[in-house]
Length: 365
Image (cartoon, rainbow, N blue to C red; front, top):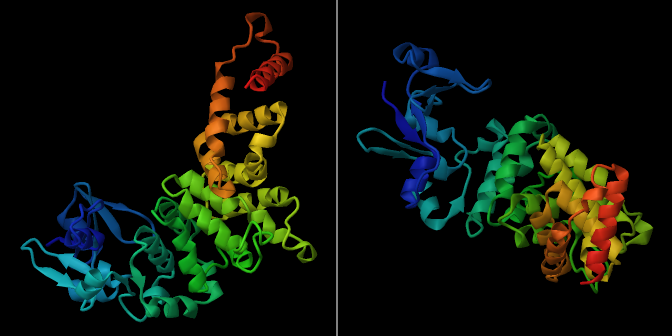
């Protein structure tokens, strides 16, 4: 039973890149493969995949490679290579690789598996100079709310995490918005697209547009990108009578960022990062005007949460000022402060004394 190298690994080789994941396919059913390879074992629940000698292997969709190619997500991934070096490919694969086009492999590609809309958006975030064929948006818009809503949260969440690490993470959500596919997974962002980010002297964009711009500005740090997505979520709760102002939006963003992380089954660390971004970003932007005690408490909350670099990177991008250089220098001052031995092990009294020493140290800066 011959194994074929399929999908992204073949695509990457054609693009002159080193493949990062090797996927294999074979003709026939899984039971036959397992009987011929008793050292292989099943993995996964909903997909017929097995692991053999460290390789993920699965049956072709259909009788062979040609039929399998027509059932894949995008033309650029509809590729297979046999052991003799023969290449099987979708009729449009070469053109789309050369022209840098993201195109569904078939008229029903997204209907067959609606999770593919998030894969498309993720590829777009990784390759911001690639064009998306109009047929992709047509298929996205044809999907019903229910078809999107019934997708496994873990699969959507995995695509989001990959997109957060992309060079242009904001494009992930721009593509979903253009394909009218933000809801239900990102219903907050759909609403944010129609709300001004703030008064025109500071903002000329919607809440969504502003957040996605900040995401792209902090690209390279997934946590900072997630914090950028969450930091202004509270603005969607603003009373329309108050617009374009968003007084107190920090508080409203806490529950919204928590719910978004929960819905996507993201880790506790991402949930905490979103809350911190929503609740503290305004104070971070005003850091240089704060009193020493307020500065100390903000620095300490961010530090004890473990988000120093990501949070202050967000603040720089959101404020348009290099606030992090001052804040992180002040944090270094705090970390040099030592609690006198006679104040050790006194519970809340020790904490109050350390804060007092911290405030004194900042006041001298």
